[in-house]
Image (spheres, one colour):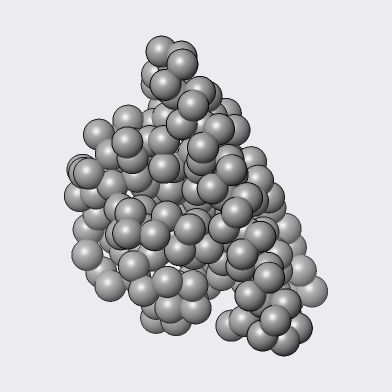
Length: 209
């Protein structure tokens, strides 16, 4: 799936240069703030010390059981959604793929986790194909319907099935923000939908230092 319009090589190069320059400027500002203050300044909402979203035990799209501790040493971004989401979910995952590129050599220290709120339709096979559209390292977690309520409650996530014309054409309303854990597995940030890859990459780079 290509979520970016092809407007010619020159425009892509200019856009990439502008994106990199914006990220560099934001990162430099964040670095200076971190050096001058005891507490780093983030563009995302700082929720350090929150007593929720502490852990999970969920199978990924390959059937492997995953826990937060599996990703020690990495910054973990957790996002809830579903594969038939028309805009928020693909936009967020494409943005995270761009964040990974902006991080350069540190991109391998970023782990994106997509938790489906629609396990009835989001089969492991469908989740495999969906995640492959964005980045091969991204993982989808699939709670069974009985587990979903507990996981969503632990992460303070809202979701609701909205009936459609048929039993299988429903949509899902759901929270659109993402949670960010630092390399020590501590919940640190909440980022709103649409924050932009350069801003998000700068916050993540601070957590990686």
